Image (cartoon, rainbow, N blue to C red; front, top):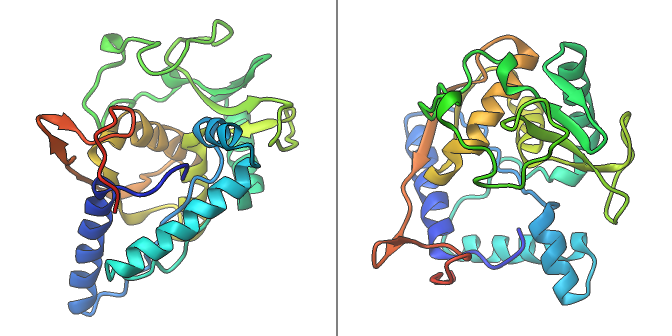
Length: 244
């Protein structure tokens, strides 16, 4: 949460709200958990531009989120966990992965070893041999494999947290796994989001979660298509967004 919600976000939220209302209409109890990533590099960058603390920026936009979606008559989730409130849960999950040899420590952070998870790519249908490292993030030369992804990134620049491996911040993927496992358990029914999250985010969530718990993570993965304008996905990076 580093900017205002746009109608692309709204579409995803409303689709899941409709699903929830349908399930509840069928007398199926729903535990709806929607987490907030309230710390990441984009938040820190935007906070620096505005000369305010990163957590203050995130809090502002979370409050805007509530207002926007209350106005759209979207039902409130059962829980809204925040990443910064679950750092210890992330530490525990990472420690388990390190102990099981699915993760390793470098001078830059703690990384998940993609090659150790034989089913990597089962959600996105991508094969590791076809993937190109560096397409999304800068390749860290310290990694055992260019495809390995960060669980914990060392940093002494605020905001940072102490960890068993050193001061730093969590990787994006581990945040969602830790909160899902805490509030929904080791095997829950539906996990989802926008279609753009299938790879790498949800693929990495599956890899790290199932490596930790040694069982299926989510039973159903549901993804919502993107809103496009003149054939291009609505995205802040493109500059074609329409705010809620």
